[in-house]
Image 1 (tube, each protein chain N blue to C red):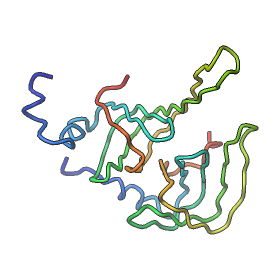
Image 2: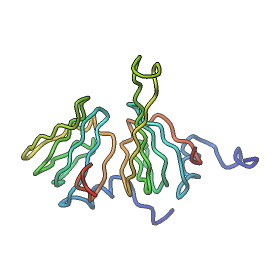
Image 3: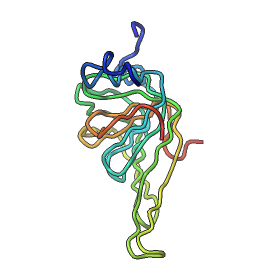
Length: 85
Length: 93
């Protein structure tokens, strides 16, 4: 347990790479992680927002985004999002 | 399980004992995860690997009366934000 990595450390190592953010609702975001804070609010760049609706998945392109940490559920480091093979 | 009460003094002890083991995690928004727990902190933020996520959706009145459908997907490594965690249970379902 001495060499255990803390969760926020894993996210810190991901700064500068792609990350896939899954929210508590029906949205997901894939972009490059520029930074985050203690509350896991996140700053992302070159973002694609995936909105899951009954009719299918809607994609929206965004530039630099500040994502409110309140709604974030899961983070997948190094992934390009739900369409990543 | 007989010696569990000797090792488990407080809730986080149970999580600590589950490190590197498969756990079942129930999240808000009708989501659940089964995967290997690698790390956690005081907020219940967690790192898990080899994860299967299940999202439960109930279809009311359409086709066979309220059939429960689930969507599953696999994720190799992920960070789970602690405030969406409802429960963590050692051992997978």
